[in-house]
Picture 1 (cartoon, rainbow, N blue to C red):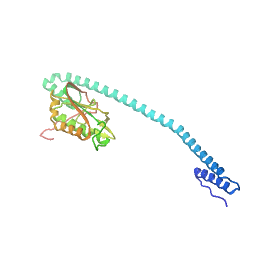
Picture 2: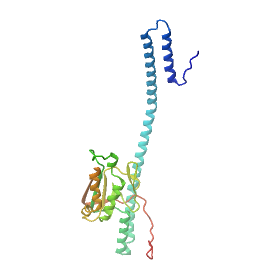
Picture 3: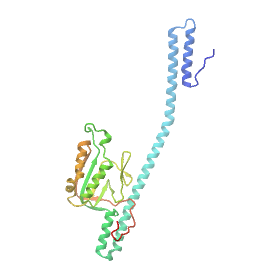
Length: 269
């Protein structure tokens, strides 16, 4: 009777090796050691074949994957450098526009110029430097509090939002997170494990710089936001530090800002 062999290559190799071994058993004088040697040789041939195939596949695929990865990294680096250069140019242009606006409106009275400057500061159109406070937030470091998982020990977007709101309530006039100026249209969100500000990813530590009154740090220390920070440290090990400073800088925003505003009359909101 003709023996049916499996179609799978690996199964065929094993089946043929077993068939040869059984043939030796049927022959007179087929010794136990000879049969054992036949099986051993077949197994080693099979293992060698598999290792050769795997090695060939790794050698073929791995360099291509590495090349694609390096190409992607290079593209990201170039795009990041280009974006940073454009953002720096935008800041310079906005500063120039602000100076031109001040010159153009100088003949309209001191009160109008002050109002224009206040609007520019509030909208993030120009940078602001002065006294204020800095809040630095950092993920927890081992050992973590008992029962806390690593994902729970990270600074979240809601934690940053809480601190920002506390600084506004304490009297801040301008706030920047890792040198990204906050405006009325700024979004603080999470994408994956990264915190985004104006859709730009941040890396810890998160430095929240606020320009405001000289006692801004002391006022913040008595706020609900400070109590929340203390609770985050106790419960999850998240680190934070609040310091007052004579000079804090909130650079001009590089995001798209509103270019027109209408004044509603008659008490409309």
